[in-house]
Amino acid sequence: MLHLSLSLLYMRLVNGRDRCEGRVEVWHNGTWGTVCDDDWDMVDANVVCRQLVCGLAVAVGSISEYGQGLGPILLDNVDCKGGETDLGQCGSLGWGIHNCYHYEDEYDFPQLDPLIRLVGGLDCCQGRVEVFYQGSWGTVCDDDWGRRDAGVVCQQIGCGHAVSSTTNAYFGYGTGLILLDNVNCNGYENQLSKCYSLGWGIHNCGHHEDAGVICSGEKLFLSLSVSLCFGRVEVFHSNLWGTVCDDDWELANAQVVCRQLGCGPAIAAKILAFFGYGSGPILLDNVDCTGSERKLEDCFNLGWGQHNCGHHEDAGVICARKTDWDYGNITYLSDVNQIFVF
Image 1 (cartoon, rainbow, N blue to C red):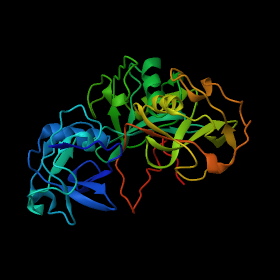
Image 2 (image 1 turned 90 degrees about the horizontal axis):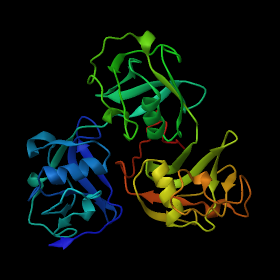
Image 3 (image 1 turned 30 degrees about the horizontal axis):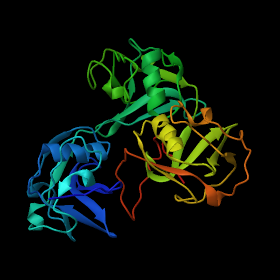
């Protein structure tokens, strides 16, 4: 059995109720193709769900759920061990080698980890906390709401550390469901949904108790990317977004970016505007990180706005964690604070 070692295996789930349910399809050599169900099990499904940032697999499905795929069958006898971050890291027969038909196409039913946003503040790093669950945005009750809970939110949305945790609908009353109550984080969780709570939709609150946060606003994102975790690096300074020059840009710098964004380890540091030309100011140049810094601006650099670069030198990164995307029909989640929309 061959072992694929692809650092970027693009994937999607097709014909499901949302992006986290459906027929598994992967992208190779300019086309989407399916995965055969030989040896397919929950271990493989969990790798898919983790790669798509969709939580844990609930079940693997059958042909009757989402119909037969079209085009080539690209993978067969996929055999994951469970620790892989990418389906391409699992064993298989190799690209296009199979003894299957489309009636054997495989399906996943992941349990989606909810998205999060801040509403009603002066910028995207402060506001009423809202989470997305089962197709709806809802609020968080302020019972037991504190600085550690707020810190998890700020880290999750890439806004630095928590300055304040607000209560009593400080940023205004929300609408719709109250989705979480009695949230109690330890502080190390990478998502609010990983913290203790009473459970989805269980509460004894009204919207006058909606929780909020004020984050420090150390904002950094990856733009021109259909993933949270790869793209051109842009930083926020003096109320402007700007790019980073690729002079001295290397993997240690990318490691700091990926860690700051909660995107796992860095796979590659990209140069020469690999993800396209940015616009606006070039804010950092000659960045030189040791790899242990908490945020990119802690690394050595020439100073804000000091550079001898053009946008053809914009730096980028590829991190280990990726979300799904639809090649040729790119959808940006414009109401999710982490993603900048072009």
